[in-house]
Length: 194
Image (cartoon, rainbow, N blue to C red; front, side, top):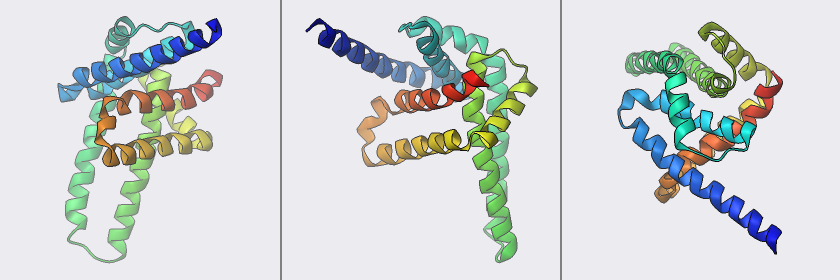
């Protein structure tokens, strides 16, 4: 009986930590310019859980938020620049027909795919290693290219989370932390070996 209660308690504790971590992440993202630093802090908490068997939330979250703020802000600026480029290109492409439109849309989708997958690995690497910004970009991009099964699984997790949230909006109370946790677990296996 003790073993069952121990497992039940561990599962309940992890679930409640994910629930509270989801709200902490949302609160930290309220000033929109802190979305990427908050997400890196979220990954930092998961790294603490994976490496130290620690289950605390608040102290590791704010510690990683502060430690990775500069690199996270650079990543966020890249995302903003990419979003602006996509917006302007799409507004131009809407007025064009034919092959040129297809080429531009394919290029935008390809760049978006690599930016998303590189970002996933960057968040995991950022909280595990002390890389310079250049090495962080380079290693993340290489992992996105060379670890295609992990990259594919991460994208599928993101898509499934998006679809489930659209179908069941009540999942917003857990979707961000659970999605990030699953992606972290998948990527961390690769990152620890790298």
